Image: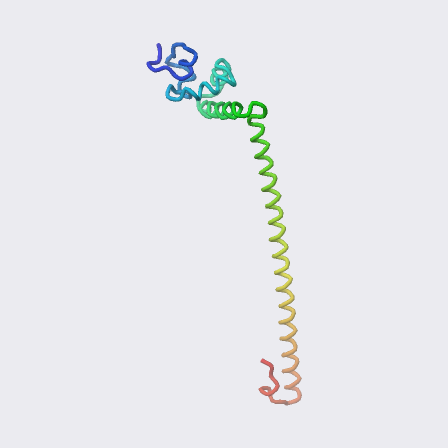
Length: 151
């Protein structure tokens, strides 16, 4: 039985659109440019074979992927998607390098902060020890705590 409205694929190929046409769900008659672009790169027979070999639940993603790849190939016949993939890999490498550099800077700042804190603790500890020693010596000598106290 024929489909009442032919899909873009069947219109393009000038054939009747069967009720179970594998192209119909992914190449609607309202978007003939989509099928024309994919057909130009892959050919109708290959599109049909690829979709038929896939489980129904992944066919839409496959049709979208074919359309994307075909449209990029039309724009750039030499490199197509490879150019985009290479650019994305380069961007990813650059982002990873920047992240590593930033993590190293954070680690350096944290280490420096810990060092500064340790040095401050040592200074505070020396001051506390000095005051305790002074207080002990003052007490031993019987001097007025209020007069000699630093704190």
